[in-house]
Image (cartoon, one colour):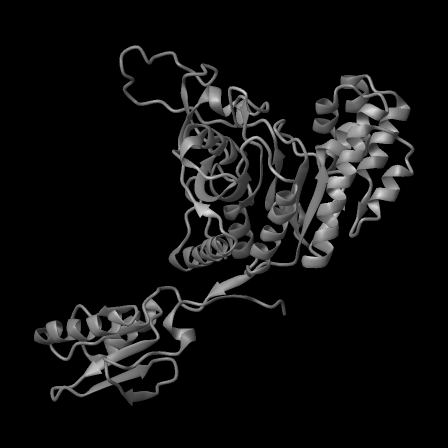
Length: 450
């Protein structure tokens, strides 16, 4: 179970917990690279103007200052567009990166990015102030075929499916569908409606209805139409007929319906049971323009979305040159915190070390290092004992460390290795001996519920 951090909102994992996190990161990295995504990393700091140019999220941003400011720097706050702040997500910095490096990139550019971000959250499980995200995006130059919206969803479904987590669902909607529908019923402030609908699960339909009436001036009929649309959820393309049955006509609505139908149709074939069309999904940030996604763990819905994102057509631009993109972001820290707190997975041992080379005497330390070097040269993680204590004490040390094997060399140069779990001890040659695949590396596996 995850240890409580001493500074709220800034989690630190114990070694065995960090092994679980590393397994998650390695699995995501491997899956992303198998699909041709290149790794990049952007700076942790952006200007406030860059961070806040899309979406009203200034309350979440951590401003940056020094204990001793340089002359002329005093008074710069987070509302000064030239002030510096820590990035709160990876999409906005990535858009800036694309614009600045457009002349060096081959488009469509496929990237993945795994970094820490900082956000002014109220700390609780699943919400931290410092956390790790893993993003994938595809960005085009001028245009980006809609097919990438479909591919991104399938890649994420594959990546999450390889992790030791409960079943999950990608809940997908399309902003064009929603905005076209709202326009069709006479709601002109579509961004305002989307922000209200985005609160549906948190505050419920009655309070959303009140927001739509008091803040946007919606009529009872308009409110009911918007809530009926948000209530549509299907595991196939039958949502299309359900939307049309509401009797709203709009060109943008039809475009969004067609795009969402393509995503769901492909997912039903290639990721069956993992994707649903959920027309309540809105996403609060203003830069989304088409496909939008949120992902929940089945049975752990109160944790919130573990993966979200969508299509953005105008986030990155340089003069008349546009760089539309689509991407999804996995909340790695949120996911790992739930894995650990619910004991959903565990590491086979608490250290990467597979072998401890024991010492017969203090003056044999050099020879023990030679053995360790041979083992390491073949990829076997190995430590050497620091003192020539009784073998029983050296074995106990290995046991406390979680090391499965202890290596012995007698005065005649004969080698033996002991599996301290079973007690079996056999002759071995440091040039050829190798543990089983299960013992060679730390294994992280899901724990079946009792």
